[in-house]
Picture 1: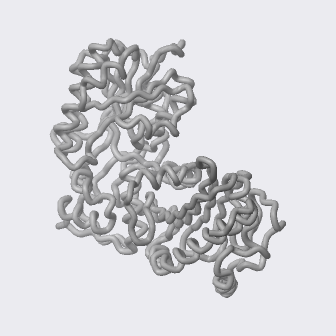
Picture 2: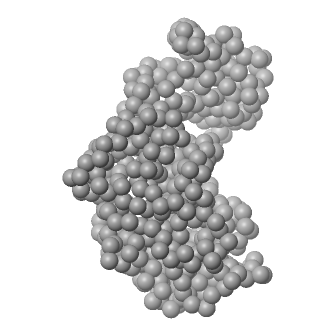
Length: 490
């Protein structure tokens, strides 16, 4: 069923490379050594995310004139575009986008299209799922051979469904759950979705195909929330009620988790009816054997730390524009507060005071407050600040610095500390230095992963104090860096 000699020279086009699935598929295809081209409305957004061998082109599926050059010479194209997050009529936008892309692909002589849609029976489709399946039909009707995958809930850190589950479980010790929370679905791990999409490149078929994909477990959102709570060590009570409709639920969800206010209704309307695999053909055709929800959830929680650690917070924060609110900026369950400043010295000189932080050298601002925090930590059974640091200047990954642990260290560039004091959650303090013109930018970022309601209360109660301390610390680092480079004090 699969080609034994995959053509390494074929050109593959990926759309949706800035999205959740597309962004992860981008990395997977690059690791396979695929001759890859990415199309994006804003190419500059992808520049820092792709390998040097990956081509980036500008294109917009709603502007047909931009598609010709993007599809030129393409053998296979992934269509991972979706407009559910838009403020307008997402069905009409998705329909128009699919028609434009399908026609352009046919004219360009594209041999194969690969598309990811949604599971659901024809007689039980919401507007969202109906639109997803209509897009697949449009692609097939173009005459270009199309492989369509249909999936239910995707489990992975950063996926829409996973983040909704996380937000509800983390924030609500007691959950009043409507009927739709107990409707069956068949979740699939993001890793398995990527395996199917990648394998589809080499599938030998002479006609368009539809494959329903899912993990081995048929579960409800309620069961997924209980699994998340179990793996996070949270005790949650679920109280079922029969009257809360998806419309009312979306309004409630918008209050509890503001990030879903705009798309909550569209998402929840999709879970009124079961979304389970009824056709097992994918297991016969593909090599992928999807994992169960326990393993998928465990890996999602584990992988988020790796993905989080690899994130460039300067890029992530700037992508949010001027959005700033009391308490910092939210990224999934984590809260981020960042400060930066420019100094006219080399990165090495700017980083010099950072690598000396803690211990006898102190924290560059309000050291007495740090001592009080350490004493409180001792009373709570924590490590306090008595550990100091191994050496006054040298730093290595794994070193203890007062009540922090060095999680990552790159000389003259990065120091990331993970908190080992008693806190209701997990916390990091990160320092980055980058060259900027004739000088350097010092960026200081506080990151908190709250554990339940107590974690959120802790963060927001102390946020004003943290702002004062971290701003003062950055000013102290700048003063110390100026002394190192002998820059006059400002």
